Length: 134
Length: 134
DNA sequence: GTGTTTGCAAAGTGTTTGCAATTTA
DNA sequence: TAAATTGCAAACACTTTGCAAACAC
View 1 (tube, helix red, strand yellow):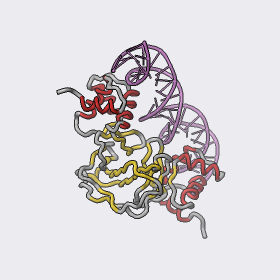
View 2 (cartoon, protein in one colour; view 1 turned 120 degrees about the vertical axis):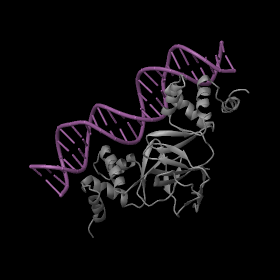
View 3 (cartoon, chains in turn orange, cyan, yellow, brown; view 1 turned 90 degrees about the vertical axis):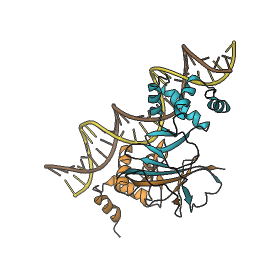
View 4 (cartoon, protein in one colour; view 1 turned 90 degrees about the horizontal axis):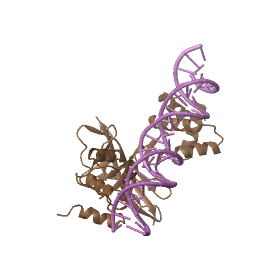
């Protein structure tokens, strides 16, 4: 089987050249099941995997992947940005004491939502349940 | 009628002395209906109202009020922190292009929520509908 | 008077940017 | 070879902190 074909195509479609760094990071991000990462985690994982990539490139790549629809940014902590490899809409559990972000499976629904402000369209819906150890 | 009695009591209960700055900021925050503010907005409003208060104190005060249960922090933008004067649980519309944060009225409900991870309790539930001009 | 709070400026943190060197096509 | 990408270090924006002066009680 040809490696990375899917990701390469997605990158090309997004106008991104499949460079060594982008492919290595894509592998790291998408070949280990659903993940929720920060830039620092990615840099650290990359280092562990002997991928030489600067932090600036990690940031660039995360944002480019997000624009390309390969990642979704989740805003839960003012101190750092999380990126989710699962892009379909879904809720999250956020462990406030550990910083762990976890997918909610099943599909949570919003009921009784008021109508949108005049002339607005939805860009995304965030459902975050903040939890802590009992 | 005695001024600020309620806020003064709430501050005292929280172990906070009702200082000139805290009272002035409380007035500014709580006497103009529901508001969603950033530290910079508060500093600017304070300046307009001839309240002399440093940015450091604005930050301290916002956090102290939040701990005291007078404010609720809303995380929507990695670049800045919002504080909501409405503390009861409710959803928000966030205008991504203007940075305006707006209360959802009516009470949105989450249905079909999966059970919490083992040993966890809920700390808060965020429902944020991100919108933009059509 | 004693302990708390304030304000300033400096430090801190995560993120972004400018630009020369490198890589891709 | 032309255009895109990378990496470094400097710059950035927001937030926090250390500490002396001011204030509340």
